[in-house]
Length: 300
Image 1: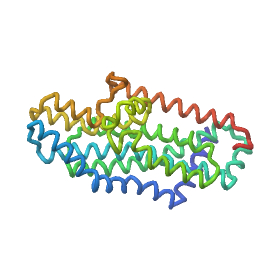
Image 2: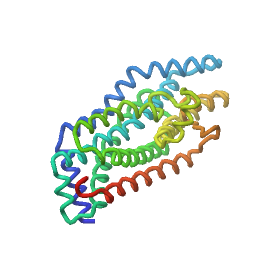
Image 3: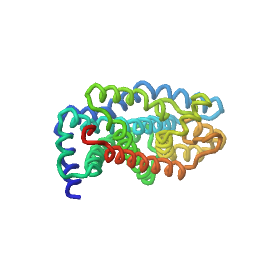
């Protein structure tokens, strides 16, 4: 444990010492919030308002704001928990480039310990940034429309923690074979551009074709996004029901924003989403440790 603690502290110090990497990771969620609030909020608001008014419902502006804000916030956190992890985990690649990784593997340290040292350092750094982003998101919700309870906030923080665990494990598996700065930049660009679409953050899965929905239902990130959506919007849907909105309308909205997910026609319960996400974390971490253990010193 002493070796693991020392490696984790070493990796975290190097990460925070690189101010460019740290501030890039920190500012990314804030930039996304500004972009989402500027460009997507009007689109989401028009969609919600037209759908509800078409059903003959009069919607208060605060309720619309809470609905739009909840979707924006859940989208931002769903993307940030994974993309920030990829940015924080670049130290693994940099150590290969500088030769520090080779020096570490020559020391009397187990490869599994070395692997967990990178994982825990990335996890702590990403959690710090995502918790800060979560605080900013909560402040945004308090401005546009607050319908959260203390339980909702706690559930959101749990969702963020699980998604960061998943994002760190995923980035560890993907980044481990990389050995050049160009490869790391290419992977980072692909993940940043594509992950938001395949996890349903930029556009709800319900808007995709039926065939694509079936494919995306196999991806753990889809369920992580849905968990965030459910907890960010639970109070909004409760308020809609309290104001007399027909249950079928509320349920249709839940379907449209991916609060309800279906696996080949069967609705996936929240408990099942947690099981899928946790199982994916365990599998990804196990795969990452196995990659480290099986790698030869030359490949390390």
